[in-house]
Length: 132
Image (cartoon, rainbow, N blue to C red; front, side, top):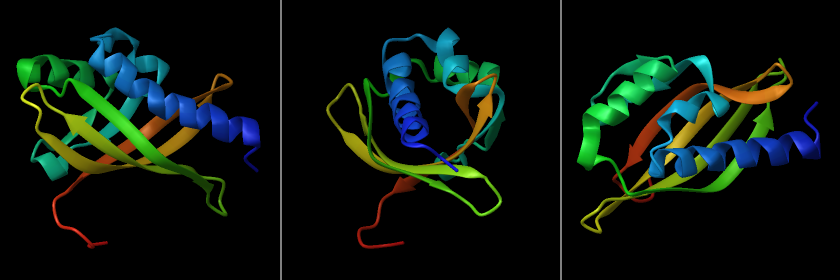
């Protein structure tokens, strides 16, 4: 059963991703994501990345096209009957030209060495209002 402390730690973990990405601290992604993370970017047409190294490489390849701001909000943490821990949150990406986009992060988390890590993340772009 998740404790309040677990939920707070998970909220902070999810928030940390944007701080690391926006400041270029890509080598610290392993403080948020499991080393063998499955990172689903199919909504962007980029397929599925495997591992924090692949995430870093993809961010570096994107270069100046990366958002200048990754903002996360509306974090909901839940635990399935089988003990699987999930989080769903909203993301807002701000580009250098001021344009922005909305997305949903769907995460699965796991306790690894007494610290929470995201082991699976699916990012879904939101383009149509009022659609599930």
